[in-house]
Image (tube, rainbow, N blue to C red; front, side, top):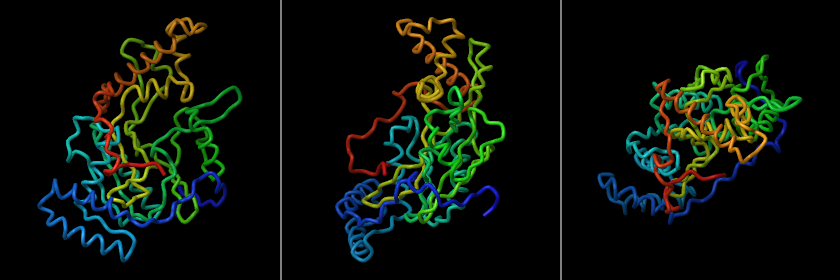
Length: 334
């Protein structure tokens, strides 16, 4: 373990417990296998495969997916997560089968590789990385998030992560000597009840500095955002089998950054600053200054990502709908 990793044992209450292994629901397994074989008849006789799975579950309480089954289930889960644009083809979802990876440092390394692969050359690609069922848990909700520092007179950075920032600081994380509003939080990977911190190098994260097409002063605000929305704290459930560590990403919607984070008081609260620079009346909500500022922040995000050649969607209609069927492969909360 090198200088970039800190082993700690405190603050056990800061992290939820790991759920024990459960016995696979055979009905869920059979339902998944029949779905898979309908679209992949070349995989062989479904009844033969179901019999194999039943025997394996009877002996071990679980079963191992084939590579093809894992890829099919993971692709379904990503495409039905609400983060996948309609234009993404079935095989455009990259599935990384890393079920042999279970060491914390290796998990952290592969998470960084996930970010680089997903960002590519700007054409953000949906990726899911599936680690071993008994791999350490990733405790971050997203692989990339910015710190929030509680200071006298307010918060520097992302207000949503003030508590998380304080928690990882108590666990041993050292913020930069010169703190900014966009300091990358470390990965928190828990192994055998012990959290380990893995700082994220800046070069592993594709970030876009924000400017505005019509407001020359906007760049002075020093805003930026990362390109890949990689969700890390959901379980991947396929045919009754759960993979507790399976980070995945889709493609950002511009308002998810501009309106929901940068403008909103729960995030960066920049609506007030932008509204004042626009000369809007911020003393009355009836002036709709919040809404007008949010629109300009959305415009800045979309303009900047487009100028940088980084993929982004501008309307929620561009995304595949969430499924009504809750029995298929899915990412689920712990």
